[in-house]
Length: 112
Length: 111
Image 1 (tube, each protein chain N blue to C red):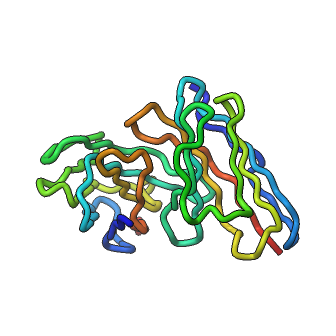
Image 2 (spheres, chains in turn blue, yellow):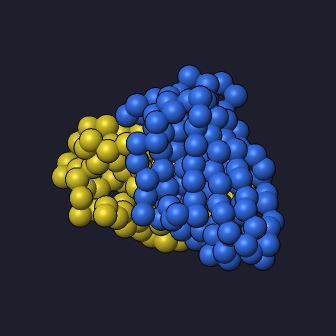
């Protein structure tokens, strides 16, 4: 078990640029989740996949956000036309169905 | 949507003291989880609870799933410096896959 891996760990970008983050889940897990965490708050759900199917999306996931899991393994989260309000820690987690989520160490995004 | 109210928001204690924190909701949950998060890292699972009334321990940590299924608490006995961090409760309602998180309890320990 190598754990959930996220890349990059930190990303600084200018407002209006596009960014993409990658998540590699625990290999046996078929569920993959994306959460966003701002300073002093708990993680907020964005979306989750079962295998390659995206089964639920939060209203927090605006049209500028898109997530994919093309082969049911790794996932990417893209933010287009970044805004300063997008600055946050983006956490990925994976699990078996109805089991606890195991989180990666996140990608910290700073939009200047 | 479902919201979890976690208290206290912060705690300042002496090393060796016991700690208690709790989480409440107006919604019914069928799973309660407790996580710890250190700065710059993701949350790490401490304890998972699946049945109302369940009491589960993990070393010096003990957590309970409330009988009403609307609350949970976490106790830490004989705190040590490495217990410093932010503790989050999280819950899952029946039929849902996403976890809803509380706002966290920041624990600070004075040696």
